[in-house]
Amino acid sequence: MTRKPVIAGNWKMYKLIDESVDTALNLKPLVANATHCDVIIAPVFTALKSVADRIEGSNILVAGQDCSTQNTFGAHTGEITASMLLDAGCSHVIIGHSERRQFYGETNESVNHKAKAAIGAGLTAIVCVGEHLAERESGDAENVVSEQLSGGLEGLTANDMERIIIAYEPVWAIGTGKTATPEQAQEMHSCIRRFVSKDHGSEVAAKVRILYGGSVKPENISELMLQADIDGALVGGASLDAESFAKIVNYR
Image (cartoon, rainbow, N blue to C red; front, side, top):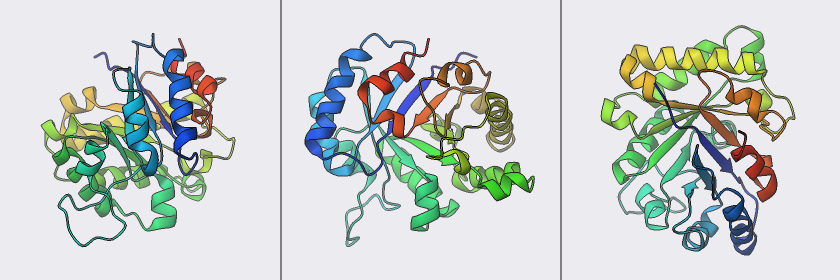
């Protein structure tokens, strides 16, 4: 089955509004002919509306970097609902990034609630999974990722899964300059597809897009994309520069 690749840029906690808009506008002509993949950028919350408005009508989609487990208005100070992201111009939202899990108490259960809230609002959820170095070295990587998937995607229907993208990010390769070899990445992506098949059926597993994240750069994207089960990339630092990110988008 042919799965359309996704190249997504996670800008993390970088760029003020004007800087975000400038980067998006610089990126726009550089990826205008990229019909081979979906292009997504995830600015900070404060810049989402400004960026989405300025690139409206282009082939660049906008994602939030997180959302609330709640999707109803209420007394939840500091939270942002998935419907608010949709209202700001987002089509996607990143959920369960390792930095959210490691530093802000994200759990498989909260990932599950957020994924359901995102889908309920009409967003596509980019659900992140991945192991720490100690877990990989102890041979427990597959079990860790399997538990994250089972917990994070629990209760989702086949229709729900059409709005799920999975991003595999080995924590030891995020922002470290280390990258899983294409073979290591492919091995885990293949396992992820088997996990999804076990829990949601082979038809869903064949359709779901699985991205690789972890120090993705223009220099390594082509080799990664040659792997059978790697359907794109969730890019961190290299997405902050329009020219660098465009090279990743235009990997072919």
